[in-house]
Length: 170
Image (cartoon, rainbow, N blue to C red; front, side):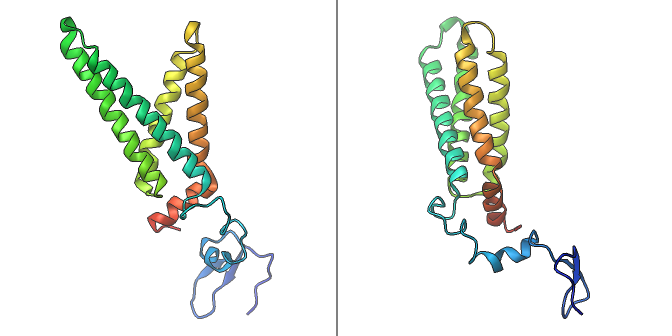
């Protein structure tokens, strides 16, 4: 039995299941990867798409700056507020280290890295919103632009596909 190409569902040969006939079926990606010009693009380095590489690089930058802030905070602890200074610096050191680890995870297409980076970007956007007035406006704009670029790279279709493929769900 033949299903028209314009049809949404078709009958599989040898199995009694309905399958998608359109080209959006994820099972047909392997069959068309040879004809897909983006699959062999020079912008895909070691299996990680360029938008995900950019998101990983900017997340690494955020992590290193956060670790730097934690170190600076630790070096400037006031004796009167010792506990507050120590916990603040430990928080920023741990948060920065988590961002650096997640940046490595994104760079190597590890699916677990998507969640922490997504959450961190939402935190950065909230921080940017709180800095939007007064003399801190340039900081707010910088944080918002950086977070938005990372989110775009993280949620780009090629990035999502690479992370899903690495998780074995594609």
